[in-house]
Length: 195
Image 1 (cartoon, one colour):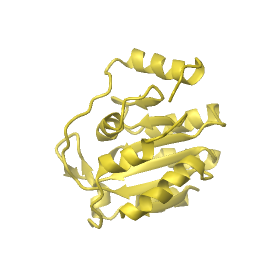
Image 2 (cartoon, one colour):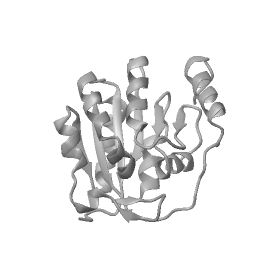
Image 3 (spheres, one colour):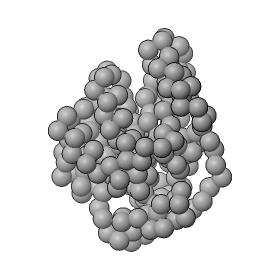
Image 4 (spheres, rainbow, N blue to C red):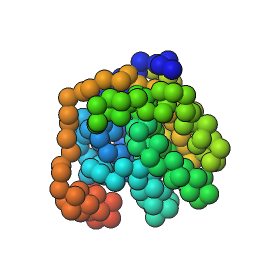
């Protein structure tokens, strides 16, 4: 099924550079490491657990902060665990929410076993059936359009990005959940600079 060889860290870095006030939920594992490698930021909430919940956390933020752009960055394994969340997002239809799934067709945190996307499960088609505008990204030339959608498009948007299955050096965010929650809350509500 492999049909693209995009570098996940380059994709995430391109999405998060000059991000301004973008709110980011980073799914557990590699997605959180990729967001941290692009630059630890107080408006990024990295998940250390709760597999399958990234999309629902993004929905909550999008509904609570309708004037802010919200991006969920997660992996295919985590998204497969939370497929029901796509239906809930589709019903709510938040115009400010984008979901980017870094699809390496592997469970990267448990030994690189193949996920269902390696066997043909089409996450984009599932998202589309739930009411998202969905696209698959396979080429570097498509990243700019994805970035434009994340920052200016009308959601809910879903991008399935086919990336190389590789084990990369860890770039770990802080591990203290209470600290991460407080940091995110202060950056969002406390008027601190997010530049």
